[in-house]
Length: 166
Image 1 (cartoon, rainbow, N blue to C red):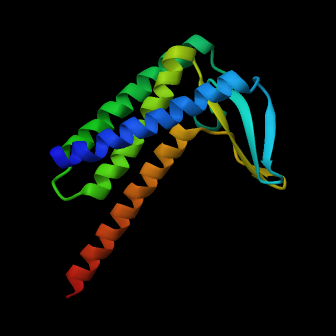
Image 2: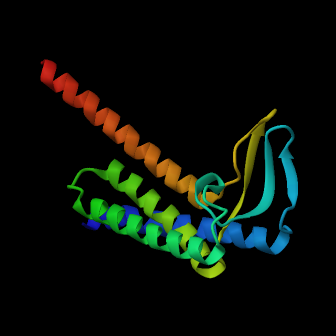
């Protein structure tokens, strides 16, 4: 358990700090709806609020219902991911890292929902007419954590296949 906490705590502290500070800077210095091109034709800094799920899904729900729904589902997801993190055997540090990143990102967006009722997004990537929905550091942490877990699964599966053919 100590090794798992040695991974979780720094990821949690650094990830939440980066997420919360970046959102506070956007809230303080960038008016809602503003857009600052940082890399012409590829990346803008924007200030938008998302009351829905990823990519604005379900954003047409009433604010109060959406707030309660997403607080409840995020809490449930945190409980499940926390349980999976807790159950990981020793030596699975890559999976611990993946789950820790997901927990941190989910907490970052949960804190937005609790205090604002919606999530602050500000990273806006696009290429020509192809536009990715705006997102934030917490979203990035969740995706990075999921990517780490996919990598762990694929490497374990490959290792198992090599072992079974020998």
